[in-house]
Length: 192
Image (cartoon, rainbow, N blue to C red; front, side, top):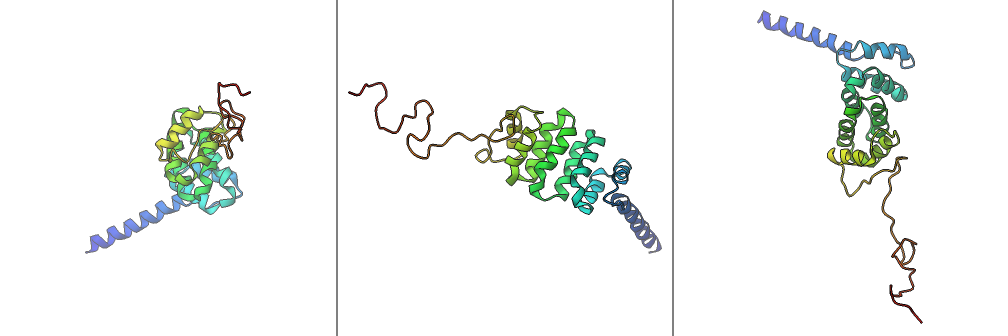
């Protein structure tokens, strides 16, 4: 019985120490202290998630610091962001992490982001496209691989703006070749 009590006490003490390491007590405005917490983290994902939750106004700065100093752990950085941020913030977070990540991780990061926030897949695609680091088709394929509905997203342009095919509201409303002018005439036959 005494062994069980000691094991329980030791377990609780270890858990408290681990939680103290994962939940840094730093001022949100002190970026040097935040960087030190990130550099000394034993569990990057937990430490970063805690910082993002504790300092919501510094999200961009904290993500940038983490992405820069842990570019080899970019998946862990994005994981912390997806755990801590609202889904509508994931696109911006993904762009920050991708901008500092190793190129071989880009597609995995897009997949992870879309998997975490599927309703914001187009925003994620557009945010990553604005970085001009990947071919738009590769971004789209990665998003679909992450679970995006192919019917709801479209390939971004180089500027990151999605381009949907033009839709004619009225017959003859577009001037695209072969659409006619709405007069109901036949192609290839001259009218007199």
